[in-house]
Length: 54
Image 1 (tube, rainbow, N blue to C red):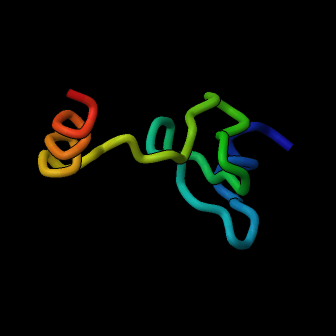
Image 2 (image 1 turned 180 degrees about the vertical axis):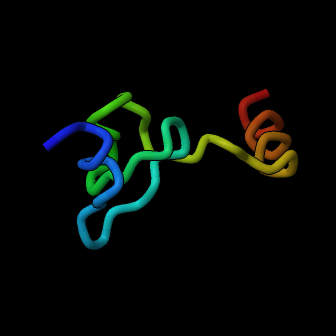
């Protein structure tokens, strides 16, 4: 089976990797290593944390 045909058949429950677009079942993409963790934070939460640490 060629790699291109493998990529077109994603396992059930797979999510697309935000980096390479391939299907992945785990928290890290087996193809590119991208984590599924979202590091985006709101300005409010950053400000509160900054004031708490100051």
